[in-house]
Amino acid sequence: MKDAYNRGTVAEPGASGLQGLPDNDVSGGTGVGRRPGTDNQAMNARLPHDHDDPRYAVKKSDAEWRAQLDTMQYQVARHAATERPFSGKFWDHFADGHYRCVGCGELLFESGTKFDAGCGWPSYWAPVNSEVIERVVDASLGTVRVEVRCNRCGSHLGHVFPDGPEPTGERFCINSAAIDFEAPK
Image (cartoon, rainbow, N blue to C red; front, top):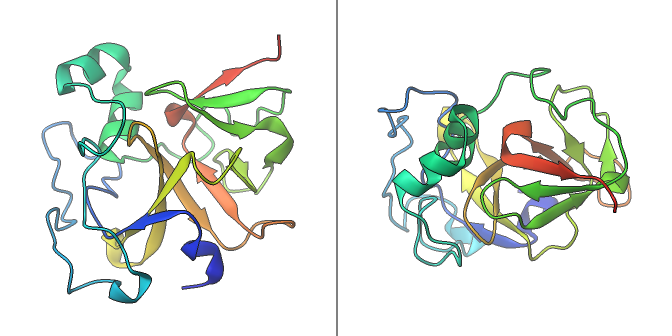
């Protein structure tokens, strides 16, 4: 994989890529629970882990997540579903401010790094810093991509691709359902 994929925390495939599956289908054919030795060893990836891994600082029960998040937010953030392109509230939103994780409120992106990638999802060329985003190799859907999660609570945000503008060359393609906007005070 290109260097753009090797920055930040990287882990092997886990519970990801559920692309809008019903609430009771959490397998998605992704091989949840795969162990090292089969995928991406060259990247020195961490052990596979799901969105409720105890290593995340924010820990909530499934009932607590369901109570906090609406249905779409829950499916995207906790089960790695993907909203349809051009359907989220932030894909064409360009006001000044900050974008925070819907799960824990962690500051993730600044409006100054947002750009129109033409893909139908909010796109940013960089997070506020490399520590707020976790990168997880996602081998679902018959291809290899890099999933991005909130490093504090494990919420699925979207994916990062090596086709963004300078200065990073990265495109963080983020689901609107995974973020909240905060205008400057």
